[in-house]
Structure formats: structure tokens, C-alpha cells
Image (cartoon, rainbow, N blue to C red):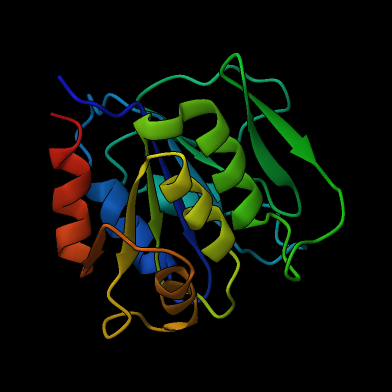
Length: 188
């Protein structure tokens, strides 16, 4: 029986192929919700979910405000909305100010998820061009969650994983194939 209950993944520039690979590798009966906080073009509202869904082993959806969180679904933060994880297993969506020039802000999704799931959360930071997510993954670590950063040597743009590594003592610095293995391993 797993010690974990949820996965949160943050990424930006260069992360789309990695997220696609992760989702394609998850089994259909994956026991956790997977929260995806990815920087996206705010004026492009369609196509991203569909593109991720093509190969994904689990359903990919953009949640609605106050929607109930269920296991075995990947929830993609909607374009131009912050995605908060709320006590009571629901989402809260917001158009508050950008954080580190981003909405959705990875930091906010990670921090709110870690407040809810505490030491039952796995946080993953992959390729990206700014340090959004560094504070969030430090928060996951502080709450006792498992932290993973993509190996900066492998990242298309290493700023985001480098920022995470500098922000806290990351549990695992892994290449994408090993991140996939770890996400399957923590579910068993």
C-alpha cells in the first residue's frame, strides 16, 4: 500500500514532451490524481488537453472551480487561471495577479497541494525557463512530501529544475525515464 495520495507536476518551456511521456506511461488504474501546473500561452484555450490526451493512460481534463478531485485523472491547470487544491478535495480557480510572470503559477498549485496532502504528496519539477515552482517544491519538502527534479543536464531548459535544486534538498534528481519509473513505483 502506497504512502502517497497525489502527484503534482510543474513545468514550462520544453516540458510538453516530458509530460506527454509521463502521462503515456501511467497505467489506466493509476491510484492518484495528477495535478499539472504548466505554463501555457494564455490566449490559446483549446488543443492542449486534447494533445495530452492522445497518448495518456489516464483521462486529462481542465477542472472547473469547486470540482471534486478524483484519483486516476490528470488535472491540467486551465490557461490563464491559478489552480489551487482546497481542503475537502476540491479545486479553486483564480485570476489573481500573476506570480513570477505566470498564471497558472506552479508555486501556488504546489503550495496548496502540499497544505492538503502534506507528506502524502509527490512533487515533480521539469524543464522550464523561470524559477516558478522552486518555492512550491521547497514547500512540498517542508511538509514532508517526496520531491523530484528533472536532471538539469537532460532538461531542454534547465532554469526550473536548477531553481528547485537550489531552493531545497531535492530527494531525487532524475532523467525523465527514471521519473516515470518513480511515479509508477510510489503507486505500489
